[in-house]
Image 1: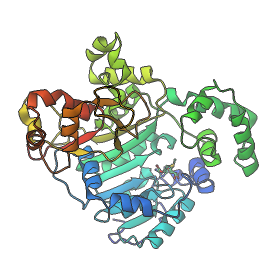
Image 2: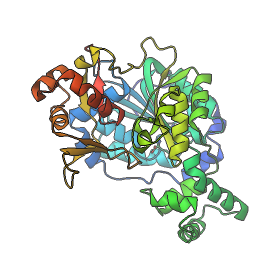
Image 3: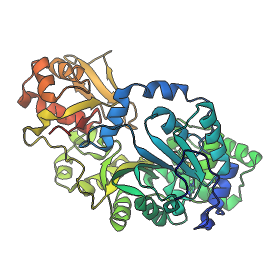
Amino acid sequence: MVNSSVATYQFETTGRADAAADRVCEFYTDHPYPPPVENLDRARDEWSDESRLRAEYHLVWPNNPYRADLNILVAGCGTWQAAKYAVCRPGARVTGIDVSSTSLDHTERLKRKYRLTNLETLRLPIESVAELEQRFDLIVCTGVLHHLADPEEGLAALRSVLAPEGAIYLMVYAPYGRAGVYLLQEYCRRLGIGTSTKDINDLASVVEALAPQHPLATLLRGSRDALNTDALADALLNPRDRAYSVPQLFDLFDRNGLEVARWYWQAPYLSRCGSISLTPHATRLAQLSERECYAAMELWRGTMTSHSAIVYHRDRGTRYEEVSFADDRWLNYVPHRLPSTLCVQERLPPGAAGVLLNRSHQFRDLILVIDPPEKRVFDAINGSHSFAEILDHAHVSAPAARGFVQKLWDYDQIVFDTSQT
Ligand SMILES: C[S@@+](CC[C@H](N)C(=O)[O-])C[C@H]1O[C@@H](n2cnc3c(N)ncnc32)[C@H](O)[C@@H]1O
């Protein structure tokens, strides 16, 4: 075991040291990404609301009772992700690993500033994570695996340290929405564009001059990073990245003894959500297997730039609760509202009492128009009461509410604590 305390270690890898000498490591040491932040006050304040912690917990584990004392690994933590996890989850023990020493230095600064005794950082490649000799309840690996020389080896290493009932929160790039990025990566390679400040600033001007119809210009219009030079360098000058379509991602999990518990945001992948559900293809899509439907939705949506999923061991004792409305068990579920959701109440269509949306959704068609009885049900959801209690309070019958509750679930408005059923 590397250590058992919550001290900080600069770790010289003994195992697969090649990852630490890799050009991706060099790139992120010279260009730490995301850009460092000095202040996590806002995140700390937002997450001090326990309902947020509970909602996130049940998104990952619907059928387990809530607990705060998780052992969390942030694999490829970058400049602040591990510190944010530690600040926002004081009851958890967080380990952040990365190959970029500059990124870890930024994390260390935050650790000192916020006196994070629950955070440990190590310079360690994902490929060598077994050297920690620990098992983690939650492994967060976002924006990293697709940069590895052998992502499969990285995923196998992560699986080897995942607790039997644990979950991986994984984000990898998706190909079709990133077509513009790959065009410009190839363009930069052909011109021999380097990563000096001048090269990066020149590249920003060149990107600004793209035709509005160029796939990269379209992507940047919809992105929060827009022409930020750090984001451009990370996307266009990265020495290595690969993207996974839905079928490729499922194949990757199949080969590595893992299974998707759920998409982090599921509505974009469901044909019963949004404008596709109103087209002549809705019935055909509904007849597909789940995987085939997800693959079709990626193609139909066309602009997904990444996939984020909650992943379990395939041989896990208990499966992700198949949230079901077929029998009456759902009446015992305790629903939690997801923090990024919003009930709009201005400029409503006639007869509507609100429009529900999730601010984290990329796609604008994923909205729910609700009527006054539905609004009464929605307003009574507070993370403490079961649906049976909520419907009683809202004076709505179970048969009348069932379809609406399923929609709240499909559209990523709520998650369930099913541990009482
Ligand atoms: C795009 S950043 C993502 C950072 C963070 N996960 C986030 O979402 O903000 C990718 C990070 O992965 C790290 N990385 C790349 N290869 C790695 C490896 N083999 N082992 C550990 N970290 C690695 C890089 O140094 C970089 O900090």
